[in-house]
Length: 132
Image 1 (cartoon, rainbow, N blue to C red):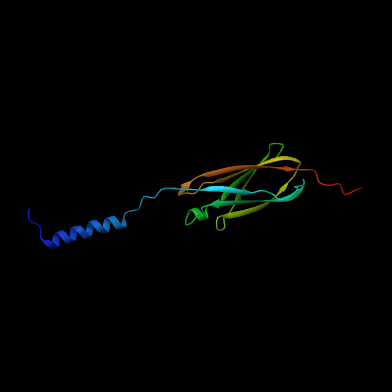
Image 2 (image 1 turned 60 degrees about the vertical axis):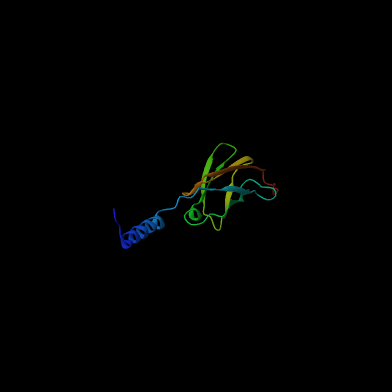
């Protein structure tokens, strides 16, 4: 077989172009969630602020994926919440209705990374009496 230089050049350029335009295979990012627990004493029938930090900071499509929170009350009621991320962090203020131990489970399931889940617990005490 006899190929001209022009034919070989075109074939080489076509091969290079197809490699350049092919989607790249990248490993999924492994994320971790760090919980920022409530500060101080948490009283029943008040708001409590919970925070999360996702590391490394998600970017692109992963950066717009919210963190899901399932807050389990002492009586077993579960309240789901969605926390939108801003630069890898999010906070939420939620009302705690009764005294006892609360369990907060945070899940981050991005489209291009490995899902991450973490759980934290915090105690809520009866509010102080204001007198009669």
